[in-house]
Length: 162
Image (cartoon, rainbow, N blue to C red; front, side, top):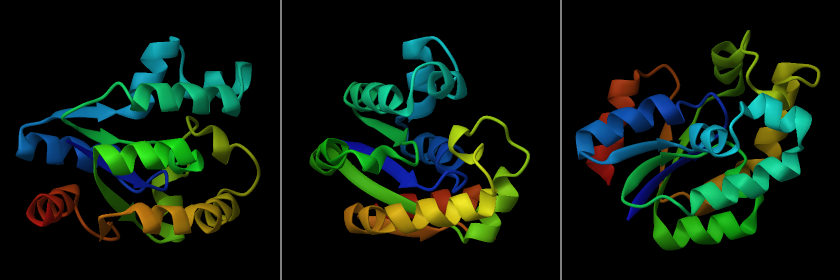
C-alpha cells in the first residue's frame, strides 16, 4: 500500500512526505523528481520543450511504478481521472492544504514552477485551487491544514491518523 500526498504546489508535500516516510520506515518518492529522472530534464524544461500534455502522460506512467512508498504527487496529479482511480485503488490519500496567501509566500521567487510563469501568482494559485479543490477533497482519506505549522507537527499528525 502507498500513501499519496496531494494538494497545491507549496503545500508541503515533499518536505512532509520525507518526514512521514522516515517515521513509518517507508521509501519516500517525490513524483516530480521521478519524472525529471525518467525524462532526463527539469520539469520547467519539459513544459517548455515538450508540453504540459506530455508531462501529464509521463506523470501517469511514473505514478504506476511506485509501491510500498510515501509518494509526494504533483499538484496536477488529479487532472487525469485514471490517476485518481489508480491512487484510490492502491493506497491512502492525504490532502495537504494551506491558504493562498501562505502558498504565495512559500512560492514567490521560485522559478521552477511552470504554471506560475503566467501572470499574477496569487491569481493563478486561486484559479488552480478553484479548478482542483473538489477533486482534492473528494479523494482525500485525510485532510491536514499546513498553515502556520512545522513539517514535524504535520508529519506526526499524519502518522497518528493513518
